[in-house]
Image 1 (cartoon, protein in one colour):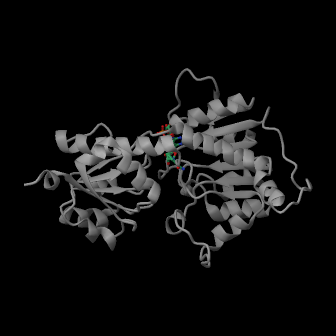
Image 2: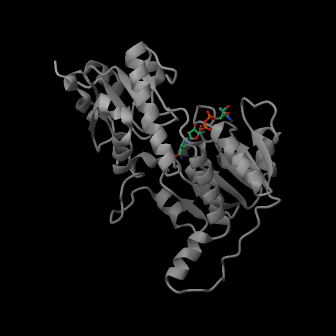
Image 3: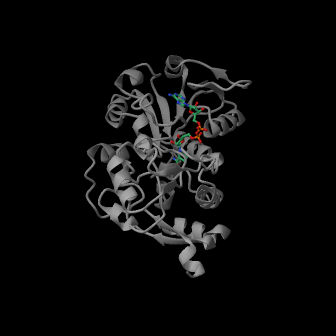
Length: 331
Ligand code: NAD
């Protein structure tokens, strides 16, 4: 058997140019035979994984029970997520059949800094000003913002990203209150219950995982309990927010602005060039049309540093799993 044939075979789904670049640049990539597929992993495309040892997937690939059974039949032994969240994987169905590993942290700064970029863009109307000056329109009408200094920000989820976001907010002189199901000890901010977050926050930023408990945390009822004019930032997972309830809250002028890097029905559209197409999702189209909504398409992770760490950790996870039968980053 040649050296090449001994290499572990990785079927890499939903690959983009920036993924290929960062994985091919990683030193460890030489140890693997990686085939990059443009397509997402779904029940229909699982057949492409036949003969591969590993499938490498991202946030919008489907790894449900049907896909898992199909992968197992085709000889796949490991699902290597190149992201932190694993809400798209049926972990129970995978248990005992194949391993699932992830990248728990690659750059909390990338995501936290993106959350702050969205907030600043929104409150200082940069998205509007940019388009105006491109057209030599130097009017300031309608561009009035507000100071972040002295405002209360409610942070939901105080893990790696939430903590970096809190530090950034403190640098801006904001008052920080936070909610976490598992509060950390020795913190320099105030923990409150979720009702207090809704009641007291001028700005709310979400940094908790998507679970059964956090699904539609923002819905019609919680929106009613929020301050009028509240700014919502979601860089976590789309389904934390009921998008129709959000739209209604914006229509009623109760929500002041929304900054969304994730959207509950993003799987069909995010990461793809849909310009020139008719968008079928009316809720997303209406949200995007609002002057006080900013949407980025799951871009918060996309920094040089984060991509490098994702590639290194993913490849190390695969090596560790096949060399030792386990992995510290197993889900
Ligand atoms: P983390 O695990 O370090 O922190 C998550 C925090 O949420 C923990 O402190 C945990 O105790 C808390 N939590 C768990 N259940 C909760 C609940 N029911 N209510 C409130 N808090 C709860 O994760 P992280 O690295 O900080 O990432 C946070 C989230 O950001 C991830 O789950 C992922 O979905 C998302 N993310 C998005 C991007 C992006 O590109 N937009 C990139 C990376 C991560």
